Image (cartoon, rainbow, N blue to C red; front, top):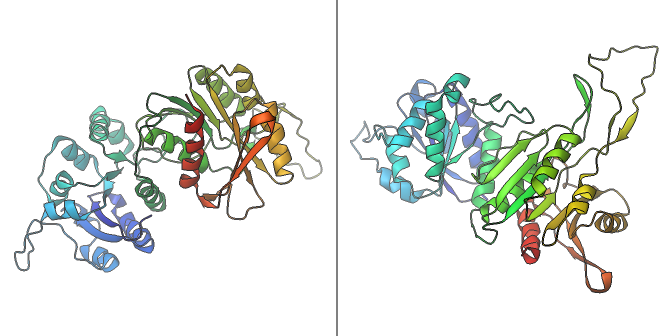
Length: 407
């Protein structure tokens, strides 16, 4: 939660600097106090007057005030802040941060920062892809900094969409979540956890697909929570555009149910636990057209569907002693009965039940309301209900239950 948090916003000389106004607006709307520190190059793209009007604070750029010679203490800023966000961050500033070239107020503030530092790179794709830039980012990650990058979704090429700065609302939402859940434990240290997240897309032709409304937020929150608790996480993600920050999350981007099945089966063998949060399509088209299907006003269109692999059932059959398998049941009716059947049929250790009848939860929402069902003594079903919460807090409840069972 950002209410009452003190944020230093660093702005550098990028064309994306105009987006910093949107970042400030989002931070202030969420109750944060914002102090802008801008590089000389940054002032070429956006004026300090604009930024000061949004933050209600003088913008800091130089070590000394040009009006009265007052010294701006970078050390004091480092102690004042609850977090530092540098957005946009150019390749030049990345290099200076990685090597300690303290030639402006922003870098000296960064070097004095006691709070977490978040970095949103913004540059041309070729500059982003250059080995020097990549090495600088890895070096900054090794220092404990968090790089916020736009994700390429299900595209396996890895670089599409990179280089440009992540959208302001996503940056602020990410910062909000990280500061809310910043307390770390190591109760999953040494454990390997497999997590599936997001939807799957089943192609009809090169431009159309069958899918669902899953945003992937619940699965990504689970991955981040496991990683914060020390686990080595393999995240098999369907086509979503969500960032990850923890270095111990290995992300595998997939599109179809078959691709998700193949990745899950491969990595489950070495996992201590698996959490199957993805909204996998139950069916796919029997035939996929190799060209766009043209509309014909005088003809109906029929698509024959065939079953997709049942990933949960297959992993349930594979499960060895000591492994924990967790499933999800998203229901619209007969919630308890359907969840109990899935718990038994797929050999799950426990199942997370949620319902579309709970408004403001599930798909596309930042909140969820769950129940956890498991087998108790004499095969009776034990049910624990939880109130509606942000998904990152829901993730913590689910992982608490996992930790009670994992060896």
